Every structure is written in structure tokens, then in C-alpha cells.
Image (cartoon, rainbow, N blue to C red):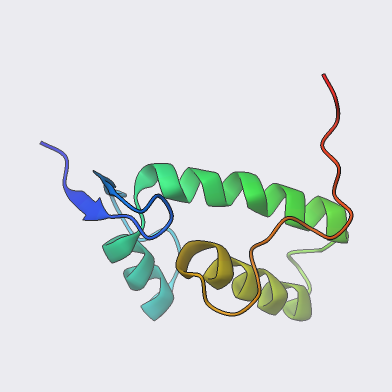
Length: 92
């Protein structure tokens, strides 16, 4: 049976991640309080953030910005994690 966590993204219990998806203390915090579904939602938002802001994961300043956005999205800390300013989804 899958381990459940009270997901900080979904606001309800949901199946947990199998392992920490990020290094260090933040990764352990994510493992303890973000579900697999919540993490998937973050990954989708991350793609938008990287593309809309033209970020490079090779740039340490951009990685710092991404981590701030992650904390905002996953835990509601700070002002990060929102959709990028001016983002308009494409109409299908």
C-alpha cells in the first residue's frame, strides 16, 4: 500500500513520492509533505516558469530563482510559484 502524505499543494491526503525529488533538506521536506500528484503539478509549472522567463538551469542565479518559485508553489512561502506575469495559455 502506498504511503500517504497531507499534500501541501493539493490540501488533502494523497499518495507520497517514492524518494526525495530534490537534494538536501528541501528535498526531505518535499518528500514529507508533497504528494506525487502535487510534485507533477510543480513540474508542469516549472516548465512554464523556465520557458516564459527564458531561464537556464546552468546559471546559478536562475537556479536560485527556480528554488524560490518552488518553495512558493509547494509551500506557499514568499511570492513565488505563480504563473509568470503576462502568461496567456494557447487556445486549443
